[in-house]
Length: 322
Image 1: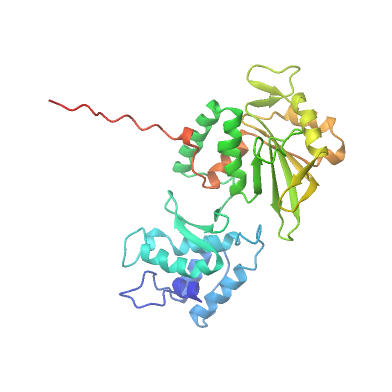
Image 2 (image 1 turned 135 degrees about the vertical axis):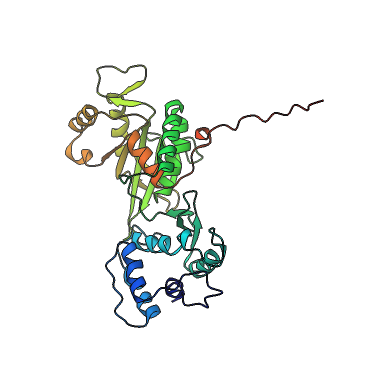
């Protein structure tokens, strides 16, 4: 009901931080959120509350992630152009919204693109309204993608894993994302990273990652800047066949799926060659991610750039004139 009153703008005009929406404007608001809800003439805030209840019943990735439609509703509600009785940063509206969201474990905030996002407080996971990696990018996102591309050109394999892949998979909802060399020493046998993902049914899937810095091809021998797919065949086989120890449950588990990640291109020939070398069961467990996949997912997930990808600040002139 608190959110419904904000959407309706049911406050004194001189004190409100939310625009008043009549019946037709409520219908327009929900159409802007890519829904088909039309106000039926009933009491506005009760109708909006019922619509929000229906939206929250839509499929969601996990218990910590509300449906994408709900994120779009929050983004539309907090559009900076709709600021009322305050500046475009909307501190009053944001405080009011967070007062309602905090009890459910969420927080709203404005990002660099001036759009409002939700963050799950306990896991610090950011919920994007449109996390589609194939959607058109804004000018700011294109620039961010170019900066990350330049970073990957120079990054080592360890930097690819630590600075890019680990934050990315954590942001995508994977848990206990752990890289080789950490205390549990559970990442031998072909795995650079292991992690797990909890399904909405509360079943857990385990994933391993084998990462390569450059292009992955099917040439007869490795070249200076490319990795040969035959080099990771044994690593992938070991990854799928060896149990990992999950200290959270105190049990061993087999890896359900293996990601082969490359900081460059993974050629079609390399994918086909590896698929032909594995039996049907193991073939279904393999997933590929190349540079384009990494770049697109990183940008739409609204992650900050790695430190090495940020433009250097020019040194300040400290000379004192006499």
